Length: 221
Image (cartoon, rainbow, N blue to C red; front, side):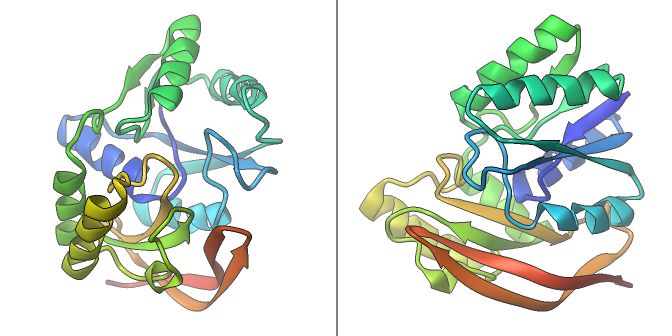
């Protein structure tokens, strides 16, 4: 079983596409839903809408709930892989050693082949590819300089220029790998349909701004 730990964001979606180009078609999307909104390993905002992305990809999908507690959530990831008889795993890790090392350890224990097609990818190269071929929006910001104007905005050429400025000023990770932001993909080359957001709102929780999708549907491209 070829599975992907799928958050609905740009990294895991692009990873699926990269593996498809290599002849590896994902058979299962595993979305882990943490109770903790600020999990070290997992994205929380809008993950319930990954069901629409799975339908658009025409790939089987399952949710797996976890408390999202640091280190303990690794046991839940391991359980999710075991329960679904995963033999090969796709992840969207780009530069986080914290995430990559832990997933590698789990896969080694379980005899799973781990595919990380974005690992070491230049952030600007990734953003340029996302901008050209995907419709991905920013759904969470949590770093200096990342203001609410980014929330709900598409990752396009204009945003890339803004992110370049933030990198020069604050040295942030433009791939958002340090938790600077989260994203959500509305359309991608492998999607048979695209997602239309009917209603959404913004929230501020301390230093974190969120773009919460309240209602969304699939529509023809």
